[in-house]
Length: 425
Image (cartoon, rainbow, N blue to C red):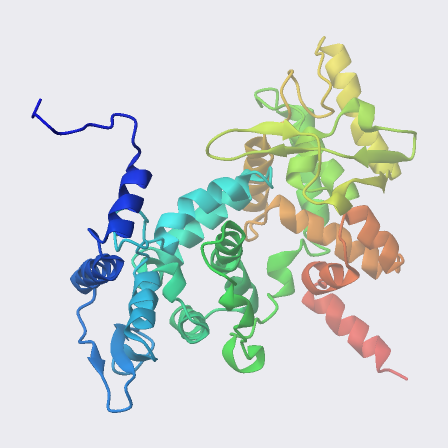
C-alpha cells in the first residue's frame, strides 16, 4: 500500500462520479460530446448515405426506400441530434448506438412467433396449414419481409398489395386469404409495441378494377345431375349389399345418408349414435379432423353455426337402421354410426367410393362436397324456406347458401322442356 494515500472501500460508483463532477475533474459537456461522437460513429457504420447541413441550417440525409423511384427518401431535421435519433430508430439501435442489443425486427423474423400466437386461437389444423402454404407462396423470397417493421410505410404496403394482386391475378377471396399474414402480424407487432400502428389497415383496394372476376362454375361440375343421382345411389346400394371384401363396410350407407342430410364429410365420419336425439332429428355437433400431421375427432363443428339439428328423412332413418342392424349382426360395438370399429369412419374410405362410383357410371369425378351442394340445391328447388336450408346446412348467412351452393341439377333436355313450358303461353 502506498504511503500517505487514503482508501475508501465502501464508496460507490455513483458517489465517485458525483465527486468528480462537483470537483471539476470530469466535465459533463465533454462526456456528452464524446457519447454523441461515439453514437454518430456507430450509426455511420449502418448508414451509407451522406449527412449534411443545408443553407437553412437544417440537417439532411437519405434512407433506403424501395417504394421511391430513386430507391431512397430524404430526411430533414432541425438538429443533428434529432436526425441521429431518427436514424437510430430506423436501424433499430438503442440509445448507445449498439445494434446488437436490439434486434432489427422484420416480418420474416416475426412470422414464426406470430404463427405460434395464432395457433392459440384456432383448433383448425387445416387453417394453419393454409397459412403456412400462403407464407411460402406469397411472402418467402420477397423484399417486404426483410424490411424493418418500423420502416414500413402506408405507401410501401399499398404498392406491395397491388403488386401482389397483379402478379398472381387474384380474386377478392384469394387476396383476403393471402393477406391474413400481413394484416394480423402487423396487428400483433403493434400489440407488442414494436410499431405504433398497423399501417396496412389504411391500404385500400379498388375491387372493381383490381380483382379478377370469378365466373360461377358450370352446374354439371358442381352437383350430381338428376339423371346421375339414382345411378350413384344404385352403385352405393349394390356395394353395401354385395361387397363383403370392403374394409369400411358401411361407407356405402354413409354416402346414401349424405345425400339425405347434406352433412360435411368430417361431420359424416363423426356421427354418433347418441347424436340421434329423437326419431326425426340428428344433432350435428362434432367433426373428424384429418390432416397430414394428425387425425382426430373434435367436439365442435367447422363454425358455431355448424352445431345444428338436421331433419331425418325416411330414407335417412332407413340407412341408420341398416347400419345398426349390420353391427348387431356382426357383434360390432362402435359409437360411430357408420364405423365398424372404435374409430370414426375414415374420410378416405368415403372419398374412394365416390371416385369408384363416378368411374363406373362414366361421369366426371365428383366429391362428397358435391353431394352437399346437390342436397342444398334440391331443398331450394323444392321451395324449402331459405332460412330453414341455411340452418340445416350450418351457414351463417343465406348469401353463402345461394352464392356458393345453389346449382341447377337439371339435364340439358330437362332445362329445355322447362323453358319451353314456361314460354308456351
